[in-house]
Amino acid sequence: MTFSQHFEGASNSEDAFCRLSTEELYWRDHQEFLESRGYMLRPRYNRGWIPSWRGKPKGTMYKAEDGYRLPFRTSVIDATRLFDGTLVYLKRTPSNSQELQILSYLSSEALRLDPRNHCVPLLDVLQDPLDPSTAFMVMPFLRYITSPPFEVVGDILECIDQILEGLVFIHDHGVAHRDCAFKNIMMDASALFPRGFHPISKTRLPDVSGIAPTLSRSKAPVKYYFIDFGISTRFAPQSSRLVVGTAGLDQEPPELSDDVPYDPFKLDVFLIGNLIRRELHAVSLNGYCRPLF
Image 1: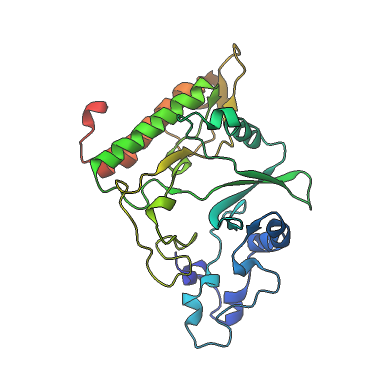
Image 2: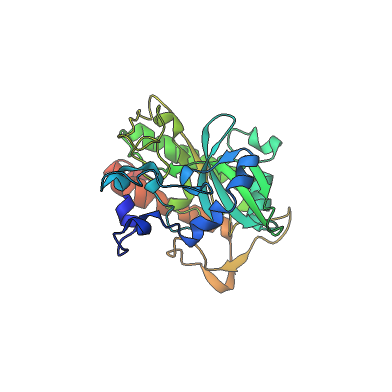
């Protein structure tokens, strides 16, 4: 998405391009706190930010790194971890949220050492100093599994293998994801981009000065992760494993119901099957994996 697309329908005046959205103002107000905890937001969110294109020729704003706004999601923002320059994601969540509790469990030291664990690592948890009921989860910055596109069948099969391995892992530990559709299975693609990439304009270099070069997955293997445990359920041993609810990205599963209990573990299998069929088999494999279905 280009900078101008973020402002579609807005005034062409410089003031319009300089204006922070309500969501951006929220993060701007937390910038100093986040920096004090070791996470730097992009220059756009510094207090006293002066657009880099101000006073320069018309059109410069369209090429400026600090011209890229956040996508229209209020709960997440990209940041750089100061001690090593790693690109990370910060996600705002209630301090007592089920997602934070489940992800903390799945990121515990004992489980993190299990090679089958494909749950997004919880790198840090920050308590909001302005609101005790809010916390910020710090996670690796991930990309969709098709960005950049697969190049060879072997890479697709490796992706499927990791996804299925990760599904078995969370189920073995009593967790049903319940929303493991395409957008909630992502990859750490940092190894594919030797010079990095911009978190908003993802095909460009971090300073948006040019196209970011990429490596093939065969030369720089990636790891695939389950993300967004917002509607997930963790079951105690020997407890009933039935749920109700229709929330989720994929509304095709026939068992979804707000009234009739269903097995969320079987739902996860259906959702992963749909992901493979829609995103990997139909689009990328040209029938190679048809015997799997």
